[in-house]
Length: 458
Ligand code: HEM
Picture 1 (cartoon, rainbow, N blue to C red):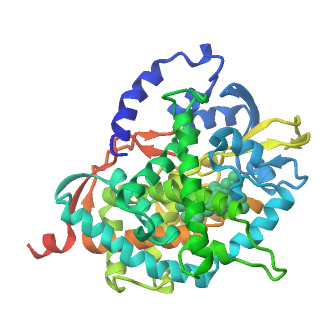
Picture 2 (picture 1 turned 45 degrees about the vertical axis):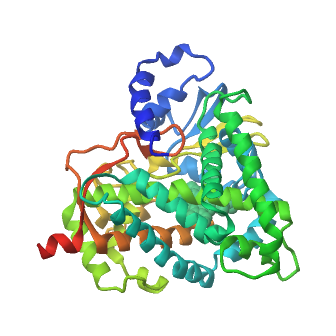
């Protein structure tokens, strides 16, 4: 995991030199990957509904809040998720909630949303706080907290550990070796989605991901009977006991599919959010101190309601999600012909809903490229300039089901980081974001990290 940033650093300059237009299979894919925002701006200058060849197919690209809204509201049910996302992430997250459509999606969402009610989130927060504490103790114990520290890989490891704890019920399910194998399997599934070579051949990411998916399925199916037999408070147990008023429940295979997807949905998204917040707080010490003072006024392990009282941190998180939305583009495919803003889209067309651009449009946001968390506070509320101005969690029937959980997890991590550490990043630093799958800083985000108490006492 920790070697990933170095590999990407080497790849990026190479990719930038490849004459994109001459590669028929990838078309504008690399153009997008090297600078997505610039790519989206250029498309939007042509119009809100345009076409491009990417990854061997023709895509319709939707840019701007009106075009994004049309696809996400999906009034005529023309846009489907399964054949859209399935094309991008491959078969490794098959039948996860985001890849189901229409009546079937509705049925599964009704059941699954019971795992994300407020009382459930309060329960997860109780487990999260000590688990985050243990993770950060390990940072200190490894002696990694004086001087330059690679924040992104450390946070990635932390959020994976949290997923093991909160989603699976902790390390007692598996020994260290098996947990490592599961982590590798999971990472293989995630990485395959971004690979251009999609063949089940020896040595390819695709083959590793198939093996990874099998391993995850076997592991979850092995532990399922025990999870069904007792009522625990980890997500895996919760899923085993969900039941609607009509008596609807999940089959064993449903639970496996949802668990694998939820691990994926929760992991990189939360990691990149904390990473972006860390970067901006490191570059804006006045905001870091403002957030820290609010955190110091709360207990180390606050309740969900107390976490929600961290108003400055909330503004910073919203602004970070605006600047770097963890899911910059949402995939769809039309199941019948339709039109968006008067432009005809044929049946079977892959469609990219480019929400990232809406976050940077000057007609919706003042100085959109500037870090300015106050834009989300009253009376400015720039996010209200359009219903789809700020959409890091998507919109419509597929809007992120884990939004409240994500908020609680990200805030818990940052709350404890602020109480324990302080950090600096050069004001001119620009994160070299890699967009092969979800965005991450290719240099691992080096920060100057110090224990907070030690420095102030010195
Ligand atoms: C900051 C973190 C997160 C961000 C930015 C985020 C973003 C998104 C987005 C944009 C979608 C909509 C995709 C689409 O319309 O095609 C989505 C869907 C989803 N997310 Fe999240 N997510 C985050 C964290 C989480 C977490 C922590 C969980 C679970 C614990 C989760 C579970 C889901 C699920 C189940 C869906 C599918 C909903 C459906 O199709 O009905 N997400 N997420």
